[in-house]
Each structure stands twice: as structure tokens, then as C-alpha cells.
Length: 67
Image (tube, rainbow, N blue to C red; front, side, top):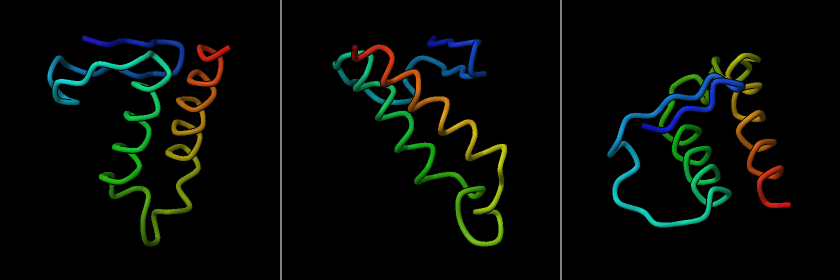
């Protein structure tokens, strides 16, 4: 299980398949998958500020671990 409580992210084992990567790569992959597969990111819901804020937090953490 992957947990980053500071940004409210919890993922069960196996949700991303079997990937081996850096922490930055994993977070980028999580960001892209959530963005692509979540109904709150398209149509009228595309303006959902809470969803956009969550995606931005994932990117921010990703950039922090890449330094």
C-alpha cells in the first residue's frame, strides 16, 4: 500500500500494475492515470477545484522528490 497522508493519497497494492520506477516516476504515473480515468476531470466536472487541487498536490510532491 502506498500512502501519502499529507496530500490524501492512498493506493492499494496492484492498482498500478507491476511497475518499477523512481518515486518521481511513480507519482507522475499515478497523476496521469487518475487524470485520464476520473470523471471529475472532463465535461462540466472539469472545473472541479478540489480535483484539480489534488492533482496539483501530486505534481508538487513529485517535483519535491526529484530534487
